[in-house]
Length: 171
Image 1 (cartoon, rainbow, N blue to C red):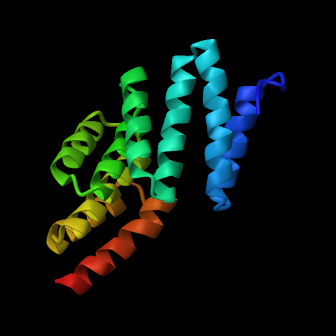
Image 2 (image 1 turned 60 degrees about the horizontal axis):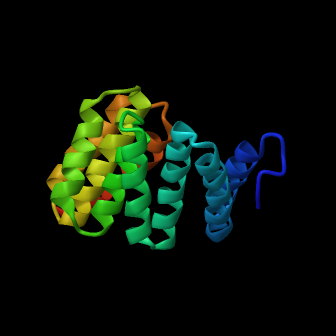
Image 3 (image 1 turned 90 degrees about the horizontal axis):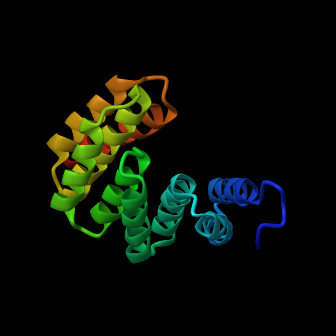
């Protein structure tokens, strides 16, 4: 994998995203690593941060939470204002059981604002974290906030009601 196409970085980036969505996670990780290697050579920090964001998400799905956290932290260092990176870092921390640190990272991302869809996504992560922590009341509250942010957002429409239902069953 290399810089063999005129837009090689974008080709590998898009292959990685498609493979991730198809559940071909190892191929997705390999493609995004190829894209990030091109970005490294070009010293393209904004695009490298985006690649690290995508790689962190894929690695978390593969269960490699140590590497997912390292990628997300490096991405945050490269592009601290890129909204998705704190989200993935918070998610990696949450699944590692480091809820207080995850909450600080995710709260900072939420405080930075953004689109209704981005805020919905943040609140649904908070809801998921509350469930993992064993706090169904907080999970229900946060799932409702996610749903109320943007009912057009597929993440809010699909995730928040499921989390709310799960929280209600735990109460």
